[in-house]
Length: 341
Image 1 (cartoon, rainbow, N blue to C red):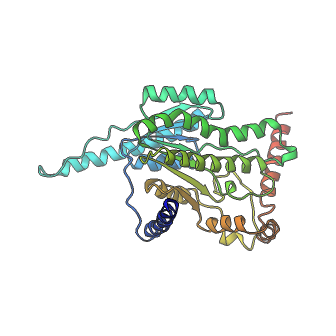
Image 2 (cartoon, rainbow, N blue to C red):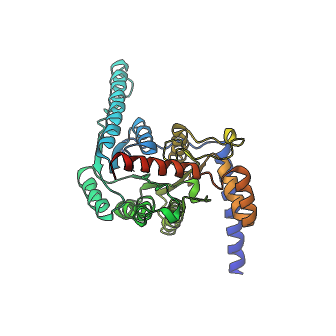
Image 3 (tube, rainbow, N blue to C red):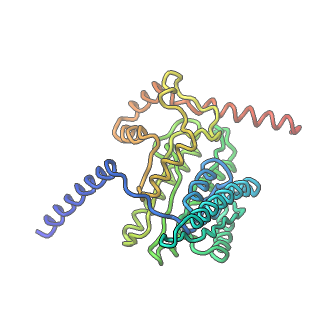
């Protein structure tokens, strides 16, 4: 009798979850505030990481930027400082124009902190995390964004590049989460964002190491989310970001069928980040961009493999990475020739 009642209760909760999800589609939840919160972004020196930093800066978050490239990381930091200065100027103008009865806005007093860190090395992650805790404070939002791609067919890819891809794209999520999650659990307050890829939900030929690393991120993030739920830490949120091909230059040369490409072009980085920000600030568990990716993922899960192969070939997605790999190989050969190697 007990199990029957529990079954009906679970069924009701499942149906209620559908109702809540539909409600969020119709009535978008209000964005939460990250003002004054410490937000740490890996791979902040360029691409999506830099754009995420600028978006969080506009929302008055305290930024901690990690990147292996110190120069590009400092360039991002200077952009963030410019935003902070603009916000402080706006606050000063509002205070000057406000009447005595109006609430006076507090001063921003925002800072950005930069750290050179190789997230593919756990010793570097742990030592840098300790510096952050000592010099900045507790991290509220951890955004794991850093990523690399080798750009080689499996049988032509050096073992060390495969290991590097797995370390940076996947293992780094373990190290950063182990470094900052304990304090989030203690305070029951935090948010972990994992930037994966559509290639972590379905794969293509020629980028086995990259796909494996992103599939690993998806599995890690989902398991972590279940662990946080099982711990009844409802103050800690998680968001998985799975964009389609983003026009950052990382996969320059990648091409699907030319007749299909106008309907599914590479995503503009700004658009991708703004969609991800909407998901993060409304505590959405997962965001696929564009929404067509949800359908592709569902079809891949239920169709026979040979049917998926037929679809890939029709779309030109089966060998879409081959032009990209060819360009990378040519660039590598040109650099070797130029350097007399």
